[in-house]
Length: 223
Length: 292
Image 1 (spheres, rainbow over the protein chains, first blue to last red):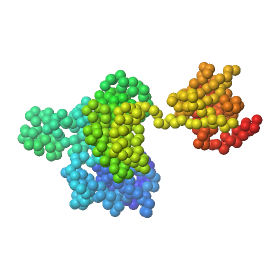
Image 2 (cartoon, rainbow over the protein chains, first blue to last red; image 1 turned 60 degrees about the vertical axis):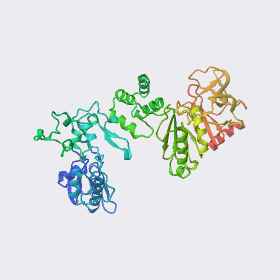
Image 3 (spheres, chains in turn orange, red; image 1 turned 90 degrees about the vertical axis):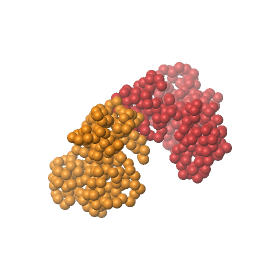
């Protein structure tokens, strides 16, 4: 057990925990986007930043990847932390404004506008789907490709992968709807689940009782 | 694509951690790009997932998944080259070869590409043709560069190892040069020494390329014998000092022009070489031998 101070509260937590796990265990909420309990921490979205150490030498670290240390002083909602999070949310909004998850975060943190060039991407490169595919589904069908502004998630050569079992876990976990149902281009589709239904779910009223993890279902939206 | 070639490349890197980049480099040397089937084969043979290999292949700019020509011409478009009219040079290449940057000629002879900086800004504009750098390129030079690349004079991509360079050595005892311009090894003048072992005496010529272990000698030498090396000029044996880092045998020091010491291992099977810059130490140690 190690003793840490979270927001002024001395608590003892198990060694080897990350700051995020410790804070959530004690009951301090920390927002996350690329973190998932069943997957390895990745530290991509930086939304879980916390301030550690004491002023003026305090610094911001991603709590999902930082293990607790004896005597660590942590602030999960200091002014600096909130400012950093608001900036991250603004940047996320600039790239993926249509994501429900990001919109919810923005409203929770009172971010009403963003000051950057508006883009309409469908991926924030959080790596959740990639980790899901390799760590939980043991498939490794999708991965990161390219680098810099060219970086993207997908299958090798952009064709359906031999090892993909069409499980749909990548779509299920995606906070930005990267791998949306691409019914109109079946060869390129990762999942194709709705296209494989007979009759296809495009004829919406037939499947009123069906749970679709696309909310709203893009295939249903396509007329 | 020949699967056997790929298999051989993979076998050459068998069992090494992180060999993926080396394997991909070798495949690219062979085909000038990475064929899809080759990547799938690498994934199968190395037991890694195709996604990881595809990720590496797309991450590095040096790899290309599109077929490239036999000759690769890269024009630097970095800031320094750009202000020294690199765009004009790209235009000239575009006109002469009839392709835009990133494209390959129909006979798959040439690929033209632009790069962002080659790190030799003072020599700009820079053009690299098949691994050979052309500096201060003017529009009028373009024709020459294309011709050189076409005739192979620009140096084949899998050609000479640039890490090897010739050294000029002197006897530390008498100061005479040991370089023999008449006896060439690997297209460079050789280092002439006399060698004696097992009661036999004869000449030996070492490659003057630092990093190379090529040599020729009068008598066939058994692989594991300590030889004594001497200067053909003054006839005196070189002092033995410093143990070889490869095999632990003593090494003999030779002075080389430009200020340095070239150590040569005296074991016939090793003969590895090492450069040190400790000339004063050598001087002090050979002073006594010189007087004797």
